[in-house]
Image (cartoon, rainbow, N blue to C red; front, side, top):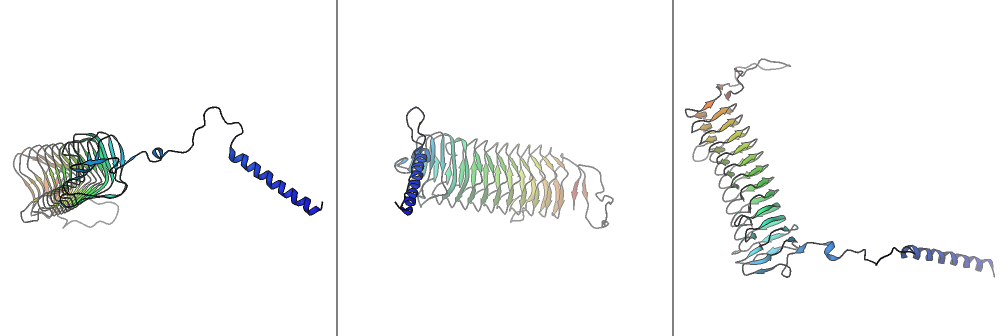
Length: 379
């Protein structure tokens, strides 16, 4: 046998050995563990444990396209187009989560609500999509008082009712509600609403029905009040601008702090009794057909503290007794302070800037003309 033939057989033998070794590696251990063999692959249910909303899984009835009757996590696989005389999705079970999955519920003329809880249910969450053009409300969990859950990252616009109506003891976060015929948001009692925007709605931007918290929210160009808050509600770090009603309209025992009311047609902030109004900026409110105030107090026992009020018919207007007014600044209003008898207030000092010395350096004498920490100022 020649050297070439011998060398060729050696190469072929080596390749065969490598192939056998490769097969052995792929095949797994020669001594597998005891017990029955099981698949290492995931089932379809394990890959997607949620339930698709469709005619098979969630068939509708006479007044709904889809109806959810069992607890679980549900999701859309595409847009839903409405039908006259029907809701888009009806919820009649506790413990339901709906992920709109970035898709839209598109209403048509004569349709009902986009999503509605048809009975009083508990723990309902809706997120991640758009609800547009329905003949009723975009989302309605308020009608039958859903309790618990959340509405997040939902855009509601152009609905003939309100954009989003939440139940009680819920969280509403990062939602927008625009161009709806009624209110932007209506929330039931003990609900927290954060990072939301209501604009160009036919009613108020936000309707808070009592004991609510609203933080980092914006109401703009609504036909009613920017924020309409019932007893016990707290608003902070929010903006009401260019609304045709009051910027913030608060009932009894409410608070508003660190917020802006700008160019609203009636009053910037209006409060009833037992409220705290502190460290807000109010500018150019009440300049519509009827005169108004940057801050209007209609009731008793309010604390109006350290607000800045610019350019209105009245800066701070107190129409009832037994209120405390301290540390505020009013500038450029027709009447800076209009306070009826039998209230308590710090001294009100007129301190126009003219006549004070310029400053260049590290120290200067004060020009406030008082050391009273509760003084109110006119400028």
